[in-house]
Image (cartoon, rainbow, N blue to C red; front, side):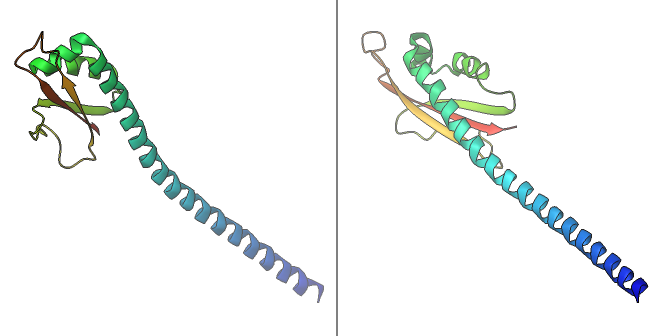
Length: 140
């Protein structure tokens, strides 16, 4: 009778250990899924914050502003490339206020877009009144 009881106790402990491992595996899977969802949300917030900060600098910096007004994206792109993470890729487009300017943007990636309007001082740029600067960012 004593041996039968010991054998039953061993089976019970094995079952308890199996259940604990199953619970640990399920918890790990849930944590991995939750972590993946949180990162995507945080990345978009970070991208938009960085885009807005860069756009504010461009609008308030006289030399970058004049680059926008004459339609030259090279200076703008150089400034932006030094101020964003290497894991991001981007493009900028300059166009008129009522124009659609989404050239050179990927259609197969999550693209984050910010735009701002740059208005000229009519004394310096009598022909160029307002330009729209579009700033597209995506992960490489």
